[in-house]
Length: 567
Image (cartoon, rainbow, N blue to C red; front, side):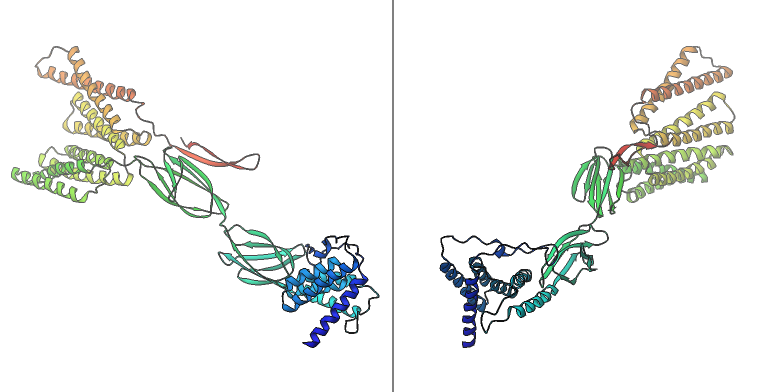
């Protein structure tokens, strides 16, 4: 303790002597480029406040001595920040190069290595060439200069420790400056870097890269956590009908159409509209790409379960009785009708789905009736025997019903399409029957004419459904037009041929007149009704809403919406 006190006293005496010899203020020196990196540490002694001009040299020495002694005490107590403050105050009061070393040592102890290097360099640069030790215990300034130079080199060689972690982990970390790349490795590691300013880039596939400037101080540890954002892509959605609402997850984003840049990933797209079936799909947004979705909603299908149950009961009764008519036993026919009707009702009630499409129901009924008539007509071409024609008609009804149900469910037939097909088959069959009545051909030829009309009607119905979407009301209006046309034709025939004879030859001609006028009236009525109701529904042309992206003259991409198709 006595030795430390003696050394402290000698230090005070040496500093006071130096202060007395440098009482005159020294000019501020210009510092060159920084000793590490681009940043030059600002030294407090380079910006001292001017002393009160009224103070005498003795007062300045006393004040400087007071600050110096307090700085020495704080240094010995480990309060290095406080020591720096008092040493700087002493220097600003009476500048002395020995104080620069004290300040540098205080900064070194508090791990402020940049400031320590700055003050050590300033100390070395201000040692006079003819400097002498202040006393016998003081170090030789020339030797001390070499010691401090070596200490500066050691401090400059200290490295900062930078730990970088990313979210998600595993990103590539690149750290460098104008002198080159200093670190390049995966996240989760510690990088040892010399003090200075660096650019740190964090990269990971599928995520936006992050770049930031970091300042690394000598010997200091640093921790950086970098959350990465997923790379972004664009989602463009066009919905039909235009009033459809578009949801992205649980959030409603638009009505009709939607376009937005989103983080890459998988999203749930929901499109809904009143009276339409809600569509839900998963869409994947890829980085730097545009995902286009065209969503056409289907109308909520009308249920046809009840009417098909009733039709199944009637059809089962007809099929059961017809099949057993082959035994030419009226009792069996009655039993078969009862059993067939009951089986049709029970089977349809328990087997048909609750949400059976109305279009499927209508088509099934149409094909069942068409199958029964068609099977009977085909059999009539070969034999007139009832015990053969009726069973074939019953079996054909079942076959036609099965085919119609399968086609309706498979093709998701609309009620209007089923109605249009039914009308075409009906009026084709009526036209064939009227032709057969007009010409009065043999039985087989007449059956062939009716069968041909039925077939042509069915083919016409299929073709029409490819180009027109009509409602059941529209189809019914056309049917009414045909009925009115037949009635009008018969009325006109009665006016043109008011006299009716009872002879066999004249009766044949009367029948021919009736058939011809009814046939003409039917065609006029159907065509007239179709023309008058032409604007009731919209033609179903092969045109679809489309959208695409085009690049403008300014390099920006713009989405175009329109219609497209083929003819």
